[in-house]
Length: 498
Image (cartoon, rainbow, N blue to C red; front, side, top):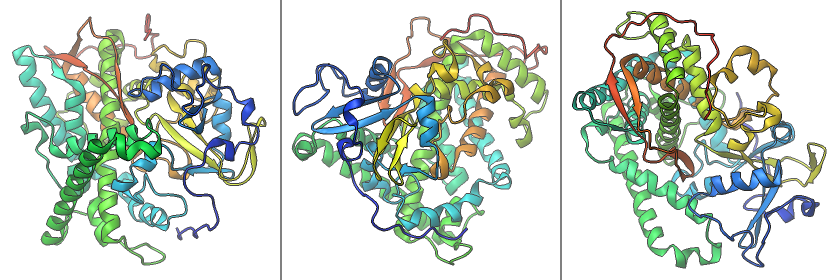
């Protein structure tokens, strides 16, 4: 694919909504708006996504919020989101927290603006790294990392201890992307505390979110110490990645993984290669995005499996039937876990770990025939509410039910109503990698353990641009026998309320 030409003259930088929405007054906003400050009364700055979800339920499928003089438009209705998915009229907008990550990720795949040529270059160079052939090559390494997880959980099970689910899933997914993509081992399971890379990554994500909650002119003053910590976190991320790249160059190459592609592959049409600076940015992008969102998805799925033992039993029966007595499942056997995949999809529906994406108008247009938008105007799609729109998901949209993703149910739903990986040309390039990894791990854990929840635990969601269950601990118990009798995987699941 040839590189897309650089578009000139398109609006760049932050644009408050009143600049792009000529009929903004028609869009509802929260009550008790305060002059200058905006909609800040009673707002919890640590949970902006969940605050926006609460407003969404009150204000409808298109609403606006104002903070420190800047106006933002949120969209969550399935009809409006489907319109925003029209690639001929809308494109990705790098806004809010994503733009705040540019000091560390620059023009990496996730944070690049549409007019920056390195996005197309990197996409075309790296896309073959997520082909079916490449994915099959990653599978043994995914199994190897998962074995380190189960060894850790076996020790906990033998001692009757609970495990830190988000912490362990973060170790798992970091090691998986590091080994499959870059031939590196962080030694996460041998550490009693998070790897410094994870600590620095969480710091940069948290800082990027905090920038959205303070007025821009005051940010240097109010966040002075946090800014210094953020600079140190970015320096640590850069140092870690630079050392990884130096080690690869010193060895003369790896096994054709993502890092080899970044360092050695030229664009098939132009012959252009990624610059050293862009290689660093892409590696950071993959290490952060490639494990942070997947660890959250696995953690939410394990929460729901432990909360609904009848669903876990049904998924476990499928694993036993499909994988039978195989010591290790083959690559092709993972895709056959259709019900386990439904559990994962339903978890991503209720809590998509990347909880929003932004879309901007390519030209003057009208959103869903109702709201005029000027070229460059943008809206934030609030994905957890899109995934709860009763027009697409029914009146029980808050209920956890994996059968929403059986083939017939999927065909009957409006298009573009399920968007955990974004939409269009800029959707997540690694989504198949993440789905294969997560399905494999869920299958392995279901086959090996019964998952015991703390009955007193109530789901709390922490936000650091991504979403993660907070304080989730489960007690794994080794199953007496891996092989269990088959069951009818199509029977309805009673009492599957969230």
